[in-house]
Image 1 (spheres, rainbow, N blue to C red):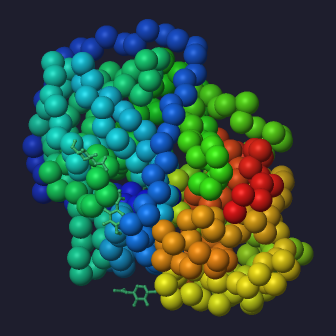
Image 2 (image 1 turned 90 degrees about the vertical axis):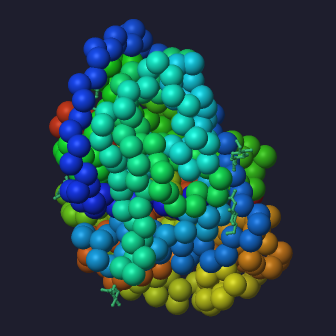
Length: 415
Ligand SMILES: *[C@@H]1O[C@H](CO)[C@@H](O)[C@H](O)[C@H]1NC(C)=O
Ligand SMILES: *[C@@H]1O[C@H](CO)[C@@H](O)[C@H](O)[C@H]1NC(C)=O
Ligand SMILES: *[C@@H]1O[C@H](CO)[C@@H](O)[C@H](O)[C@H]1NC(C)=O
Ligand SMILES: *[C@@H]1O[C@H](CO)[C@@H](O)[C@H](O)[C@H]1NC(C)=O
Ligand SMILES: *[C@@H]1O[C@H](CO)[C@@H](O)[C@H](O)[C@H]1NC(C)=O
Protein backbone atom coordinates (compact mmCIF):
# COMPACT_ATOMS: atom_id res chain seq x y z
CA UNK A 1 0.00 0.00 0.00
CA UNK A 2 0.92 2.92 0.19
CA UNK A 3 2.64 2.55 -1.21
CA UNK A 4 3.50 2.25 1.92
CA UNK A 5 4.36 -0.78 2.23
CA UNK A 6 5.27 -0.88 5.09
CA UNK A 7 6.39 -1.25 8.01
CA UNK A 8 3.80 -2.35 9.28
CA UNK A 9 4.58 -5.66 9.17
CA UNK A 10 5.87 -5.35 12.44
CA UNK A 11 6.45 -8.79 13.57
CA UNK A 12 5.50 -9.27 17.15
CA UNK A 13 8.71 -10.69 18.40
CA UNK A 14 9.13 -11.20 22.07
CA UNK A 15 11.40 -8.24 22.35
CA UNK A 16 9.87 -7.07 25.56
CA UNK A 17 11.12 -9.75 27.81
CA UNK A 18 13.54 -7.26 29.23
CA UNK A 19 10.88 -4.69 29.94
CA UNK A 20 9.91 -5.66 33.40
CA UNK A 21 7.85 -2.79 34.65
CA UNK A 22 4.42 -3.66 35.83
CA UNK A 23 1.29 -1.91 34.78
CA UNK A 24 -0.26 0.63 37.07
CA UNK A 25 -3.92 0.36 37.71
CA UNK A 26 -5.94 2.64 35.49
CA UNK A 27 -8.78 4.63 36.97
CA UNK A 28 -12.25 3.50 36.15
CA UNK A 29 -13.42 5.03 32.91
CA UNK A 30 -16.99 5.48 31.76
CA UNK A 31 -18.15 3.40 28.87
CA UNK A 32 -19.09 5.11 25.68
CA UNK A 33 -22.80 5.46 25.18
CA UNK A 34 -24.36 2.70 23.21
CA UNK A 35 -24.93 3.44 19.60
CA UNK A 36 -26.06 1.34 16.71
CA UNK A 37 -24.68 3.59 14.06
CA UNK A 38 -21.78 2.46 12.03
CA UNK A 39 -19.47 5.22 11.08
CA UNK A 40 -17.25 5.94 8.15
CA UNK A 41 -13.86 7.60 8.13
CA UNK A 42 -12.56 9.25 5.01
CA UNK A 43 -9.17 8.00 4.05
CA UNK A 44 -6.63 10.10 2.26
CA UNK A 45 -4.37 8.56 -0.31
CA UNK A 46 -0.75 9.55 -0.62
CA UNK A 47 1.14 8.85 -3.73
CA UNK A 48 4.82 9.16 -3.29
CA UNK A 49 6.04 10.69 -6.48
CA UNK A 50 9.50 11.47 -5.24
CA UNK A 51 11.06 8.38 -6.64
CA UNK A 52 9.63 5.29 -5.06
CA UNK A 53 11.83 2.59 -6.48
CA UNK A 54 11.38 -1.07 -6.62
CA UNK A 55 8.06 -1.65 -4.96
CA UNK A 56 8.38 -5.35 -5.60
CA UNK A 57 11.48 -5.61 -3.45
CA UNK A 58 9.88 -3.62 -0.65
CA UNK A 59 6.75 -5.75 -0.74
CA UNK A 60 8.85 -8.90 -0.73
CA UNK A 61 10.73 -7.68 2.31
CA UNK A 62 7.45 -7.16 4.06
CA UNK A 63 6.31 -10.61 3.01
CA UNK A 64 9.37 -12.14 4.59
CA UNK A 65 8.56 -10.40 7.80
CA UNK A 66 5.10 -11.93 7.74
CA UNK A 67 6.34 -15.41 7.24
CA UNK A 68 9.33 -15.44 9.51
CA UNK A 69 8.37 -17.35 12.58
CA UNK A 70 11.13 -16.24 14.83
CA UNK A 71 12.57 -13.22 13.15
CA UNK A 72 15.76 -14.96 12.17
CA UNK A 73 15.16 -14.57 8.49
CA UNK A 74 13.45 -11.31 7.83
CA UNK A 75 14.86 -8.55 5.76
CA UNK A 76 14.65 -4.91 6.48
CA UNK A 77 11.61 -3.01 5.46
CA UNK A 78 11.76 0.52 4.24
CA UNK A 79 8.41 2.11 4.78
CA UNK A 80 9.18 4.85 2.34
CA UNK A 81 9.28 2.37 -0.49
CA UNK A 82 5.59 2.52 -0.93
CA UNK A 83 3.83 3.74 -3.95
CA UNK A 84 0.43 4.30 -2.52
CA UNK A 85 -0.52 4.76 1.10
CA UNK A 86 -3.90 5.18 2.71
CA UNK A 87 -4.06 7.22 5.87
CA UNK A 88 -6.66 8.38 8.36
CA UNK A 89 -6.54 11.27 10.80
CA UNK A 90 -7.07 9.83 14.25
CA UNK A 91 -7.55 11.83 17.44
CA UNK A 92 -5.77 10.97 20.68
CA UNK A 93 -6.50 12.61 24.03
CA UNK A 94 -9.29 14.99 25.06
CA UNK A 95 -9.31 17.52 23.55
CA UNK A 96 -7.92 15.41 20.76
CA UNK A 97 -4.73 16.00 18.86
CA UNK A 98 -4.98 14.49 15.40
CA UNK A 99 -2.32 12.17 14.00
CA UNK A 100 -2.05 10.90 10.44
CA UNK A 101 -1.88 7.13 10.67
CA UNK A 102 -1.31 4.42 8.12
CA UNK A 103 -4.28 2.04 7.85
CA UNK A 104 -2.85 -1.41 8.32
CA UNK A 105 -4.61 -4.76 8.36
CA UNK A 106 -1.23 -6.51 8.61
CA UNK A 107 -0.41 -5.32 12.14
CA UNK A 108 -2.53 -4.80 15.21
CA UNK A 109 -0.94 -2.31 17.60
CA UNK A 110 -1.84 1.35 17.25
CA UNK A 111 1.06 3.71 17.79
CA UNK A 112 2.05 7.31 17.21
CA UNK A 113 5.15 9.44 17.56
CA UNK A 114 6.96 9.04 14.23
CA UNK A 115 6.38 12.64 13.15
CA UNK A 116 4.26 14.66 15.55
CA UNK A 117 4.97 14.31 19.25
CA UNK A 118 2.33 13.12 21.70
CA UNK A 119 0.26 15.83 23.36
CA UNK A 120 -0.87 14.52 26.73
CA UNK A 121 -4.21 15.54 28.22
CA UNK A 122 -6.15 14.55 31.34
CA UNK A 123 -7.22 11.32 29.63
CA UNK A 124 -3.63 10.22 29.00
CA UNK A 125 -2.50 7.50 31.41
CA UNK A 126 1.01 6.17 31.45
CA UNK A 127 0.58 2.43 31.97
CA UNK A 128 4.13 2.12 33.21
CA UNK A 129 4.79 -0.34 30.41
CA UNK A 130 7.10 -0.29 27.47
CA UNK A 131 5.79 -1.39 24.11
CA UNK A 132 7.76 -2.71 21.23
CA UNK A 133 7.54 -4.53 17.94
CA UNK A 134 10.46 -5.68 15.89
CA UNK A 135 10.94 -5.65 12.20
CA UNK A 136 13.97 -5.86 10.04
CA UNK A 137 16.58 -8.31 8.97
CA UNK A 138 19.06 -10.58 10.68
CA UNK A 139 21.81 -8.00 10.47
CA UNK A 140 19.76 -4.89 11.07
CA UNK A 141 16.86 -5.79 13.26
CA UNK A 142 14.90 -2.59 13.76
CA UNK A 143 12.25 -1.71 16.27
CA UNK A 144 9.37 0.50 16.94
CA UNK A 145 9.54 0.93 20.66
CA UNK A 146 8.52 3.33 23.34
CA UNK A 147 6.07 3.72 26.17
CA UNK A 148 2.54 2.39 26.37
CA UNK A 149 -0.21 4.84 27.25
CA UNK A 150 -3.90 4.38 27.64
CA UNK A 151 -5.91 7.22 26.16
CA UNK A 152 -9.12 8.27 24.48
CA UNK A 153 -8.94 7.63 20.76
CA UNK A 154 -11.34 9.37 18.40
CA UNK A 155 -11.94 7.87 14.97
CA UNK A 156 -15.10 9.86 14.22
CA UNK A 157 -17.54 11.72 16.44
CA UNK A 158 -19.48 8.43 16.78
CA UNK A 159 -16.46 6.25 17.32
CA UNK A 160 -14.69 7.31 20.46
CA UNK A 161 -12.73 4.71 22.40
CA UNK A 162 -11.85 5.06 26.07
CA UNK A 163 -8.80 3.40 27.55
CA UNK A 164 -7.23 2.42 24.27
CA UNK A 165 -3.67 1.15 24.50
CA UNK A 166 -1.45 3.22 22.26
CA UNK A 167 2.25 3.04 21.76
CA UNK A 168 4.12 6.32 21.96
CA UNK A 169 7.23 5.57 20.00
CA UNK A 170 10.65 6.96 20.70
CA UNK A 171 12.34 4.56 18.29
CA UNK A 172 10.59 4.06 14.99
CA UNK A 173 11.14 3.36 11.33
CA UNK A 174 10.89 6.01 8.63
CA UNK A 175 7.22 6.31 7.80
CA UNK A 176 7.74 9.08 5.28
CA UNK A 177 6.36 11.73 7.61
CA UNK A 178 3.34 9.79 8.85
CA UNK A 179 2.76 9.76 12.59
CA UNK A 180 2.23 6.05 13.11
CA UNK A 181 -0.07 3.14 12.43
CA UNK A 182 -3.71 2.29 13.07
CA UNK A 183 -3.53 -1.47 13.60
CA UNK A 184 -6.54 -3.31 12.19
CA UNK A 185 -5.05 -6.80 12.27
CA UNK A 186 -6.18 -9.62 14.57
CA UNK A 187 -5.38 -9.28 18.26
CA UNK A 188 -3.12 -12.35 18.17
CA UNK A 189 -0.42 -10.18 16.60
CA UNK A 190 -0.22 -8.05 19.73
CA UNK A 191 1.07 -10.91 21.86
CA UNK A 192 4.07 -9.90 23.93
CA UNK A 193 4.18 -6.37 22.56
CA UNK A 194 3.74 -4.74 25.96
CA UNK A 195 5.46 -5.55 29.21
CA UNK A 196 2.64 -7.36 30.92
CA UNK A 197 2.60 -9.90 28.12
CA UNK A 198 -0.53 -11.39 26.66
CA UNK A 199 -2.55 -9.52 24.13
CA UNK A 200 -3.45 -5.85 23.90
CA UNK A 201 -7.07 -5.19 22.87
CA UNK A 202 -7.08 -3.56 19.46
CA UNK A 203 -9.06 -0.51 18.46
CA UNK A 204 -11.72 -2.82 16.97
CA UNK A 205 -11.81 -5.00 20.10
CA UNK A 206 -12.38 -1.98 22.32
CA UNK A 207 -15.07 -0.44 20.13
CA UNK A 208 -16.94 -3.72 20.43
CA UNK A 209 -16.26 -4.29 24.13
CA UNK A 210 -17.38 -0.72 24.90
CA UNK A 211 -20.55 -1.33 22.89
CA UNK A 212 -19.87 1.48 20.47
CA UNK A 213 -20.30 -0.98 17.62
CA UNK A 214 -22.44 -4.09 17.69
CA UNK A 215 -20.40 -6.19 15.28
CA UNK A 216 -16.64 -6.34 15.14
CA UNK A 217 -16.58 -5.63 11.42
CA UNK A 218 -15.03 -3.06 9.14
CA UNK A 219 -15.14 -2.41 5.42
CA UNK A 220 -12.36 -0.97 3.27
CA UNK A 221 -12.91 0.92 0.05
CA UNK A 222 -9.93 1.95 -2.04
CA UNK A 223 -10.36 3.42 -5.51
CA UNK A 224 -7.76 3.04 -8.22
CA UNK A 225 -5.14 5.71 -7.70
CA UNK A 226 -5.58 6.83 -11.28
CA UNK A 227 -9.34 7.26 -11.01
CA UNK A 228 -11.05 10.57 -10.30
CA UNK A 229 -12.08 9.17 -6.97
CA UNK A 230 -8.82 8.50 -5.26
CA UNK A 231 -10.19 8.88 -1.75
CA UNK A 232 -10.80 5.81 0.31
CA UNK A 233 -13.19 4.89 3.07
CA UNK A 234 -12.97 2.84 6.22
CA UNK A 235 -16.38 1.92 7.59
CA UNK A 236 -16.40 0.58 11.13
CA UNK A 237 -19.18 -1.46 12.73
CA UNK A 238 -20.61 -2.34 9.34
CA UNK A 239 -19.68 -1.88 5.70
CA UNK A 240 -20.75 0.58 3.04
CA UNK A 241 -23.33 -1.10 0.85
CA UNK A 242 -23.41 1.87 -1.49
CA UNK A 243 -19.92 1.02 -2.70
CA UNK A 244 -20.83 -2.53 -3.64
CA UNK A 245 -22.24 -3.53 -7.01
CA UNK A 246 -22.21 -7.33 -6.79
CA UNK A 247 -22.90 -9.92 -4.16
CA UNK A 248 -20.68 -10.45 -1.15
CA UNK A 249 -18.36 -13.41 -1.26
CA UNK A 250 -17.35 -14.59 2.22
CA UNK A 251 -14.35 -16.73 3.12
CA UNK A 252 -13.68 -18.00 6.60
CA UNK A 253 -10.21 -17.66 8.00
CA UNK A 254 -7.53 -20.15 7.16
CA UNK A 255 -6.24 -22.60 9.73
CA UNK A 256 -2.82 -22.68 8.09
CA UNK A 257 -0.01 -21.04 10.07
CA UNK A 258 1.43 -18.42 9.75
CA UNK A 259 -1.35 -16.97 7.54
CA UNK A 260 -3.77 -17.78 10.39
CA UNK A 261 -2.25 -15.06 12.55
CA UNK A 262 -3.33 -12.39 10.04
CA UNK A 263 -6.48 -11.83 8.01
CA UNK A 264 -5.70 -15.13 6.31
CA UNK A 265 -7.87 -17.00 3.83
CA UNK A 266 -7.51 -20.03 1.58
CA UNK A 267 -7.61 -19.51 -2.14
CA UNK A 268 -6.49 -20.87 -5.47
CA UNK A 269 -5.43 -18.83 -8.48
CA UNK A 270 -5.67 -19.39 -12.19
CA UNK A 271 -4.56 -17.33 -15.15
CA UNK A 272 -7.30 -17.74 -17.73
CA UNK A 273 -8.02 -21.45 -17.53
CA UNK A 274 -4.49 -22.37 -16.40
CA UNK A 275 -4.04 -23.09 -12.71
CA UNK A 276 -1.00 -21.32 -11.31
CA UNK A 277 -1.57 -21.95 -7.61
CA UNK A 278 -3.68 -24.73 -6.14
CA UNK A 279 -5.54 -24.17 -2.89
CA UNK A 280 -3.26 -22.51 -0.40
CA UNK A 281 -3.23 -19.95 2.40
CA UNK A 282 -2.71 -16.24 1.89
CA UNK A 283 -3.41 -12.97 3.67
CA UNK A 284 -5.16 -9.69 2.93
CA UNK A 285 -2.92 -6.73 3.70
CA UNK A 286 -3.63 -3.05 3.14
CA UNK A 287 0.05 -2.41 3.89
CA UNK A 288 1.30 -4.21 0.78
CA UNK A 289 1.16 -2.47 -2.58
CA UNK A 290 1.20 -5.37 -5.02
CA UNK A 291 -0.31 -8.83 -5.26
CA UNK A 292 2.44 -11.23 -4.25
CA UNK A 293 2.37 -14.93 -5.07
CA UNK A 294 4.74 -17.81 -4.32
CA UNK A 295 7.80 -18.05 -6.57
CA UNK A 296 6.68 -21.22 -8.39
CA UNK A 297 3.31 -19.62 -9.20
CA UNK A 298 4.99 -16.37 -10.19
CA UNK A 299 7.17 -18.21 -12.69
CA UNK A 300 4.06 -19.72 -14.28
CA UNK A 301 2.46 -16.28 -14.41
CA UNK A 302 5.56 -14.77 -15.94
CA UNK A 303 5.75 -17.41 -18.63
CA UNK A 304 2.02 -17.15 -19.40
CA UNK A 305 2.12 -13.36 -19.74
CA UNK A 306 5.55 -13.14 -21.36
CA UNK A 307 6.57 -10.43 -18.88
CA UNK A 308 10.24 -9.61 -18.48
CA UNK A 309 11.73 -8.34 -15.21
CA UNK A 310 12.27 -4.59 -15.32
CA UNK A 311 15.23 -3.45 -13.31
CA UNK A 312 14.06 0.09 -12.67
CA UNK A 313 10.71 -0.84 -11.08
CA UNK A 314 11.27 -4.43 -10.00
CA UNK A 315 8.02 -5.33 -11.78
CA UNK A 316 7.38 -7.47 -14.83
CA UNK A 317 7.11 -5.37 -17.97
CA UNK A 318 5.03 -6.30 -21.02
CA UNK A 319 4.56 -4.85 -24.50
CA UNK A 320 1.29 -3.43 -25.79
CA UNK A 321 0.81 -6.58 -27.87
CA UNK A 322 1.26 -8.73 -24.78
CA UNK A 323 -1.15 -6.51 -22.88
CA UNK A 324 -3.77 -6.98 -25.58
CA UNK A 325 -3.42 -10.74 -25.14
CA UNK A 326 -3.54 -10.84 -21.34
CA UNK A 327 -6.08 -13.17 -19.75
CA UNK A 328 -7.88 -12.45 -16.50
CA UNK A 329 -6.56 -13.82 -13.24
CA UNK A 330 -9.14 -15.66 -11.13
CA UNK A 331 -8.83 -15.86 -7.37
CA UNK A 332 -11.11 -18.61 -6.09
CA UNK A 333 -11.95 -17.50 -2.59
CA UNK A 334 -14.89 -18.95 -0.70
CA UNK A 335 -17.41 -20.11 -3.26
CA UNK A 336 -16.62 -17.66 -6.01
CA UNK A 337 -13.86 -16.89 -8.48
CA UNK A 338 -12.99 -13.21 -8.29
CA UNK A 339 -11.78 -11.88 -11.62
CA UNK A 340 -8.85 -9.51 -11.87
CA UNK A 341 -9.07 -8.18 -15.41
CA UNK A 342 -6.07 -7.47 -17.63
CA UNK A 343 -6.44 -3.77 -16.78
CA UNK A 344 -6.47 -4.67 -13.10
CA UNK A 345 -3.16 -6.50 -13.52
CA UNK A 346 -1.23 -3.44 -14.65
CA UNK A 347 0.22 -0.60 -12.65
CA UNK A 348 -1.63 2.70 -13.25
CA UNK A 349 0.26 4.25 -16.12
CA UNK A 350 -0.25 7.73 -14.68
CA UNK A 351 1.95 6.63 -11.78
CA UNK A 352 4.67 4.94 -13.82
CA UNK A 353 7.26 7.61 -13.21
CA UNK A 354 6.54 7.54 -9.48
CA UNK A 355 7.91 4.01 -9.35
CA UNK A 356 10.87 4.64 -11.61
CA UNK A 357 9.20 3.42 -14.81
CA UNK A 358 8.85 5.09 -18.18
CA UNK A 359 5.68 7.02 -19.04
CA UNK A 360 4.47 4.56 -21.66
CA UNK A 361 5.71 1.33 -20.00
CA UNK A 362 3.22 -1.37 -19.05
CA UNK A 363 4.09 -3.04 -15.73
CA UNK A 364 2.34 -5.95 -14.05
CA UNK A 365 1.30 -5.69 -10.40
CA UNK A 366 1.71 -9.37 -9.62
CA UNK A 367 5.03 -9.93 -7.87
CA UNK A 368 7.10 -12.73 -6.41
CA UNK A 369 6.70 -13.37 -2.68
CA UNK A 370 10.26 -14.69 -2.50
CA UNK A 371 9.77 -18.37 -1.66
CA UNK A 372 8.04 -21.39 -3.13
CA UNK A 373 4.49 -22.32 -2.22
CA UNK A 374 3.81 -24.53 0.75
CA UNK A 375 5.12 -22.49 3.66
CA UNK A 376 1.73 -21.40 4.93
CA UNK A 377 1.58 -17.92 3.45
CA UNK A 378 1.71 -18.14 -0.33
CA UNK A 379 -0.31 -15.10 -1.40
CA UNK A 380 -0.53 -11.50 -0.21
CA UNK A 381 -3.49 -9.60 -1.51
CA UNK A 382 -2.44 -5.97 -1.37
CA UNK A 383 -3.63 -2.59 -2.52
CA UNK A 384 -3.67 -3.44 -6.24
CA UNK A 385 -6.37 -6.05 -5.63
CA UNK A 386 -8.20 -4.08 -2.94
CA UNK A 387 -8.72 -1.13 -5.29
CA UNK A 388 -10.79 -3.50 -7.48
CA UNK A 389 -12.86 -5.19 -4.76
CA UNK A 390 -14.46 -3.84 -1.59
CA UNK A 391 -13.17 -5.85 1.37
CA UNK A 392 -14.93 -6.67 4.64
CA UNK A 393 -13.15 -7.99 7.73
CA UNK A 394 -15.22 -9.55 10.50
CA UNK A 395 -14.46 -11.13 13.83
CA UNK A 396 -17.07 -12.97 15.86
CA UNK A 397 -16.65 -14.88 19.09
CA UNK A 398 -16.08 -18.08 17.14
CA UNK A 399 -14.50 -17.08 13.83
CA UNK A 400 -12.87 -14.54 11.61
CA UNK A 401 -13.73 -13.96 7.98
CA UNK A 402 -12.88 -11.78 5.05
CA UNK A 403 -15.32 -10.99 2.27
CA UNK A 404 -14.98 -9.30 -1.08
CA UNK A 405 -17.52 -7.62 -3.31
CA UNK A 406 -17.32 -6.00 -6.71
CA UNK A 407 -17.39 -2.20 -7.00
CA UNK A 408 -17.74 0.22 -9.87
CA UNK A 409 -13.97 -0.18 -10.32
CA UNK A 410 -13.81 -3.99 -10.61
CA UNK A 411 -13.97 -3.90 -14.39
CA UNK A 412 -12.73 -0.34 -14.88
CA UNK A 413 -10.10 0.37 -17.50
CA UNK A 414 -8.65 3.36 -15.69
CA UNK A 415 -5.12 1.94 -15.71
C1 LIG B 1 -7.86 -0.56 30.19
O1 LIG B 1 -7.38 -1.47 29.19
C2 LIG B 1 -6.47 -2.45 29.68
C3 LIG B 1 -6.01 -3.29 28.49
O2 LIG B 1 -5.43 -2.48 27.49
C4 LIG B 1 -7.13 -3.30 30.72
O3 LIG B 1 -6.17 -4.20 31.25
C5 LIG B 1 -7.67 -2.42 31.83
O4 LIG B 1 -8.39 -3.21 32.74
C6 LIG B 1 -8.58 -1.34 31.28
N1 LIG B 1 -8.99 -0.44 32.33
C7 LIG B 1 -10.26 -0.07 32.51
C8 LIG B 1 -10.51 0.86 33.64
O5 LIG B 1 -11.18 -0.46 31.78
C1 LIG C 1 16.57 -16.60 4.38
O1 LIG C 1 15.75 -17.29 3.45
C2 LIG C 1 16.26 -17.33 2.14
C3 LIG C 1 15.22 -17.97 1.22
O2 LIG C 1 14.61 -19.07 1.86
C4 LIG C 1 17.59 -18.08 2.15
O3 LIG C 1 18.14 -18.10 0.85
C5 LIG C 1 18.54 -17.35 3.09
O4 LIG C 1 19.77 -18.07 3.18
C6 LIG C 1 17.94 -17.22 4.47
N1 LIG C 1 18.81 -16.38 5.29
C7 LIG C 1 19.06 -16.66 6.56
C8 LIG C 1 19.94 -15.69 7.27
O5 LIG C 1 18.62 -17.65 7.13
C1 LIG D 1 8.81 9.30 -0.68
O1 LIG D 1 9.89 8.46 -1.08
C2 LIG D 1 11.17 8.98 -0.77
C3 LIG D 1 12.22 8.06 -1.38
O2 LIG D 1 11.93 6.69 -1.10
C4 LIG D 1 11.28 9.11 0.76
O3 LIG D 1 12.54 9.65 1.10
C5 LIG D 1 10.19 10.02 1.27
O4 LIG D 1 10.24 10.06 2.68
C6 LIG D 1 8.83 9.53 0.83
N1 LIG D 1 7.82 10.51 1.23
C7 LIG D 1 6.64 10.14 1.73
C8 LIG D 1 5.72 11.26 2.08
O5 LIG D 1 6.33 8.96 1.90
C1 LIG E 1 5.16 16.08 9.87
O1 LIG E 1 4.89 17.07 10.83
C2 LIG E 1 5.09 18.39 10.37
C3 LIG E 1 4.94 19.31 11.57
O2 LIG E 1 3.72 19.08 12.20
C4 LIG E 1 4.10 18.70 9.27
O3 LIG E 1 4.29 20.00 8.77
C5 LIG E 1 4.31 17.70 8.15
O4 LIG E 1 3.32 17.91 7.15
C6 LIG E 1 4.21 16.28 8.69
N1 LIG E 1 4.56 15.36 7.63
C7 LIG E 1 3.61 14.67 6.98
C8 LIG E 1 4.11 13.82 5.85
O5 LIG E 1 2.43 14.72 7.27
C1 LIG F 1 -1.19 -16.80 17.74
O1 LIG F 1 0.19 -16.51 17.88
C2 LIG F 1 1.01 -17.55 18.41
C3 LIG F 1 2.43 -17.06 18.41
O2 LIG F 1 2.58 -15.85 19.07
C4 LIG F 1 0.89 -18.81 17.59
O3 LIG F 1 1.59 -19.86 18.22
C5 LIG F 1 -0.57 -19.19 17.42
O4 LIG F 1 -0.68 -20.29 16.55
C6 LIG F 1 -1.35 -18.02 16.86
N1 LIG F 1 -2.75 -18.32 16.68
C7 LIG F 1 -3.27 -18.50 15.47
C8 LIG F 1 -4.75 -18.70 15.43
O5 LIG F 1 -2.60 -18.48 14.45
